[in-house]
Image 1: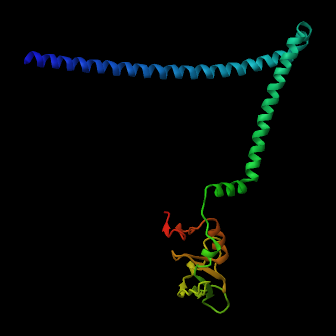
Image 2: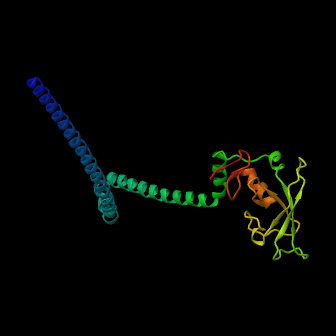
Image 3: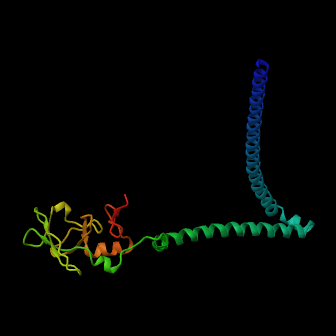
Length: 228
């Protein structure tokens, strides 16, 4: 029994030893591959720098001693000139193309944003859904039509479905549209969302046609939930 146990333990030890050797070999292999990859990257960088420096030296030789080379080896001279001209043209083309792309991005950025916004699949509200929003008429608290210390009142108006909301009193700091950042003038038409945030009717309609969420709390008027 002890012999069998010893053999079992010996076998276990041998098995562990084999596994350990396998792990060591795997580690050495990984280290070797990473070392080779790093060496290859360094060689690539050195090759790039050497090619660039050799290009500059060759360009200098052709420009400074081109007359003698043209006499001794005209074909080699013109081949070198064509090669250098092609390189210069390609470099100038890349620089001009990069500048044109940058100018195009700056000039067409609003259109690009609109296209990306459409491709992203943002869901806007329809006219029927917008017509169901509660409507209000803002009434300033003083007589001259300007916002006074008492703020103002949101007087409810009937919407298409005949729904009439309740009157709301606004403090001066709340009597402004967060989209256009303008204070409510006396008689301005307002819309309120289910989350109780209110805006100019024209501002919020334009917003909801593109994105059916509240600009402040991201409440989705179509799905009835908050995205934040």
